[in-house]
Length: 159
Image (cartoon, rainbow, N blue to C red; front, side):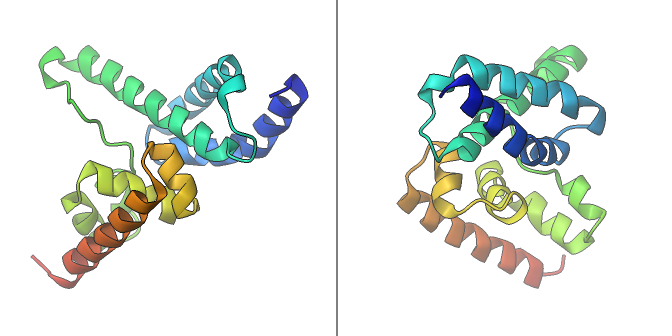
């Protein structure tokens, strides 16, 4: 990727990456994390497939969110580190919009939430979400179908 292509990618995708980060971390952290995402992207710009910039940036952003949460967690309590951080919006952030959705969302696995969030909130297609999560498009499609079915079941059942 040439420097000019990178600048164009930055200008085009910074708003989407900022929204992605804004649903996953406190608003006051978004700008710093977005800068880090694009810093890493600049360093790895030769590894992106042209036309796949946004899923590639989401993948970098998900790693940055994980690293940020890990740093936050270790700063608060070293013993509370989690092995598989959740890179999807929290149930609490969804509760602002719909309490039933938040309750159903909280019951999903972190990987189901991550895939659903990329498709439903971030507007990626299945293939792009698969690239962002480093899984095959077929696996993403099947997993998305199962995750949607689980969420629908959780929304139908009131605790």
